[in-house]
Image (cartoon, rainbow, N blue to C red; front, side, top):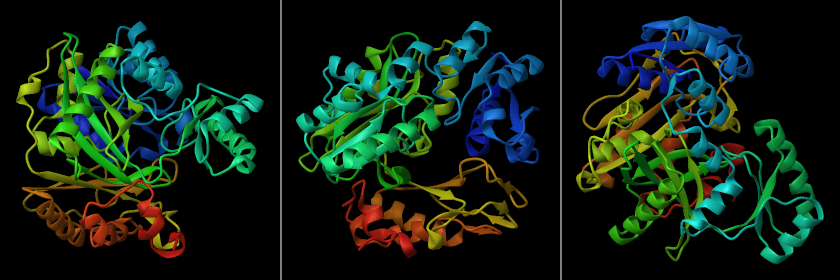
Length: 450
């Protein structure tokens, strides 16, 4: 492997470029017409235009990306997260072209990409899943819902990112929920297939980072807490998770490793669980890619997950074993998005007129912007990931408060005020978080529910 094309944009493209540079690999950025002046384009060794601003004509266009591979002579592709990162067809095309896809094999992506099949795979591996159904529709869905019981969730089989999901409190809501979820799933994923799942009230969202190589080694890197969510999109993450005992961590890690082995997984991935009030955990899905929040795990383990991904793709064994993994201290990540919390999180595209990131002990900023950068309206609204590390959770929180106060981003609205509110909330400080807490009582402005 000599030259890596990063089939992505923004902060994850910058993150991969830096990892490649440390490993002595040349990089190729791809960009749409809206991203000509983006930081990842300036940082890469080469850059290739892949289409106009709309993602389907650029970052989601497999022909355009493969043309960029051919033009640049890249011999590997890193998909980042989002866009085509979990697209089996893209991984297969790379394989057919003799280009290394820095991620899992197409077969593993396929098996874990459909949530219904992923549930079946987890069950076969002896991993508990939330009670639910196989894909259903019409009268079959009505009968299955009656048997499963309410409240329940209608979920897209090919879903992700909180799309294609509806909560159903009773039979009178089911038909409309099926119709809306099906339509949304078809538009977002090209598949209208749905399944039903029992709703666990006020669960926590706890995930296990896994990484595996081509030599049969599967290692887990502890857990992350991702319970603070808005519209099922993660807002703030931390590692480790409050109240997860060593015994529970081991149990969840073993379960995650069994899921990875069941699909002959290679590369970095995340196995996601719901954790109920009694400490029971349930598999919900596996993300077959690098996660946005991977940096939390890097800070508490000292493992550079992106570099390890690249080494694994080169056929090397993992540079460490399970016995080498130790969790040290506490890490928190705040996702800084170009949104206005005071106006129901309205998107805030525009030009960043001033950008002054924080620094000091225990602070890390992963960003794809600088002063003068344009936040276009076409893509995900993330501006930067702000991370703090401390010897314990209170120190990590104190450093994050300081960093949020120092962070200066002018010209656009951001979610910094929301994070400041969260870090002062007594329930967050006590670790009393769950997946509906943020929307139930922490939101500013008109989104707040009392």
